[in-house]
Image 1 (cartoon, rainbow, N blue to C red):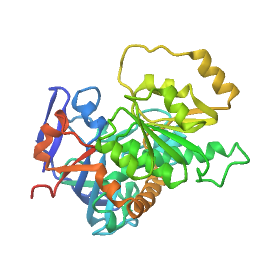
Image 2: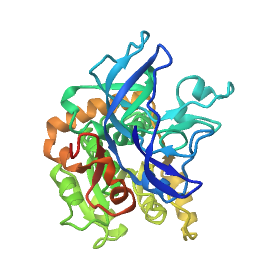
Image 3: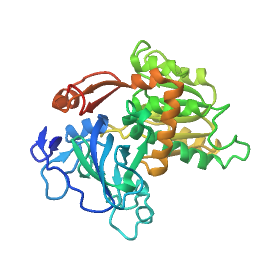
Length: 369
């Protein structure tokens, strides 16, 4: 089969001839891959910042944001059937009996760090024609989401974060019902796909939502943010002090840039009882200056909370599928606008090594055919 592979030992990215997978266990399903999203992680792997092939293999098949169709199932498969659209999860548990998280199928909270991740760490990804996957890692979604189903995995980042936010904010006995942000203000840091999907999730829950990004006011990203009812603030013309003035008391920040300096300066203006969610992973850069005394004082005296979140379990995938259905009903054009273009995998160099532009580019096995 054709697959987009990275060969770290040779510092190469190319189309590889990847072996066709065979079902070997009764709980496995064979998937025909339809769409595979391209994100910053894929580009960082292609820059050889990380990315590890499976043991004993030279190449790693890329891709962790995916949409597939079930074409065959083992006799013990119960979650999906032939013809279903599915989004596979990404992380697989570590082998250690002492890891309570992995033994409870919550490898997104793995203690040991020895998990594997499809398309990232010691497990092949989804940028190929066929994939075999265990039933327990497949998340079925309705046919109505065929056009945008590849957005489920990046949406799970926000879904997992918000699940934790509601758990955390139960500390406040006067808060609204779980899952409601009505009367609260949120800032989304960034205007990429993860940020825009996060903004949609916040708006759906009633938050007055502000998107703060370097993207110009006339950019497609800003246009999408405005079209869903978010307040767009361009960081080129408004500094963080001005942002805070426009927003007022900030109840929640959803960071989706990996820009540490901006994130920690925004933390300085987080409101009382506020929650700050970090999702970005910054590259190795020079140290930044922080007013540590101010940050610590605010965290203590304003009962603030900062947490990071990565990957997602089944609960977040199921929530993402439900919310994506609601997004399509509420903002159909905006959801479609997040996907800028579909490319055939033969265009891998332009997409992964170039600057194709837009919001979200994907590889499609239907594109150009």
